[in-house]
Length: 400
Image (cartoon, rainbow, N blue to C red):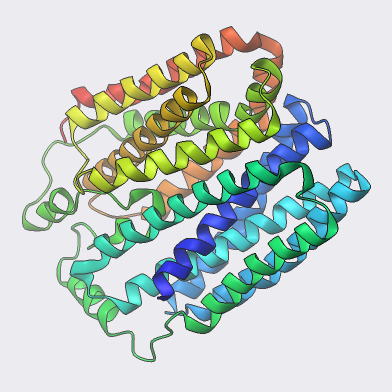
């Protein structure tokens, strides 16, 4: 029961993330540069809160992060309503930063509960289930809101939505398991110690976008020393390009849909919702082991094809949703593969360095995304996006 509540909670957080961006673009009239700065503020807030949440996770705590997240979420909901009613541009920044804090704590608490509640052999399965239900919940939530968008911020409607979100998270706070004995992860750490100088066991499962990491490929390293591996500079270049390219795509995308493609706000929300639901369906049939050179190459090309088709072809709602789902799933495969390669190349050491580089790259991407599109225009920015997203193909020629 708690796992489904956790997925629903994470889905609602993702759903509110898009709502804030839609509010900024459509109601507050943000331009591309302002939208980039707003998303950079979210990234700035998520970095320290995620660090603290990870410290709580290392202590085996699950309920405390959810409590901290619920507190932040409550204030966020109030500030977002005040932002819309008063058309107050200043308030949207602290509101969105509180959303980042809530996201960091609740997501970390849920991931920790998976690690503490299930056998290590089942971590991958339950982590994938958590992510899948979160994607489905977000998609269904967005589709529902697209039908009532015009009245969403009327007092009683917003109150009902707020109470539903808070009730889900309060229920999660009460039901999420808080083991008194951290038996499973202690055993796993003993195993890590015995395999010292080699890869960490299941460490990749702490990152949500890596729920499809290839466990067989990672654990194979435990049984042998690494030979010639991937060049770390090449891997770093690929990671930076991938993260910056993601921000150049996803940060201005609501603005592009509304002002460049002329879509109505409910249609934009429905487009994202359908994309999430289609992505969920693909995730259900996608194999658990996705880290391979063939899958990486195919995902890179599929993502580029999806981006180019949306911007150039500007298809109808259902086709755009299908392309968005293709981009989502391709991103999962690429992100998973990059982390798997990093584990191989570093023998599992300095795992935190990967997250630091990824977060710094995302911050740079959000800050500059609007400036780049304003300076270069949509078509030239599309060429930059294609170049950045081709970078993972550099790894195809590496030994991994």
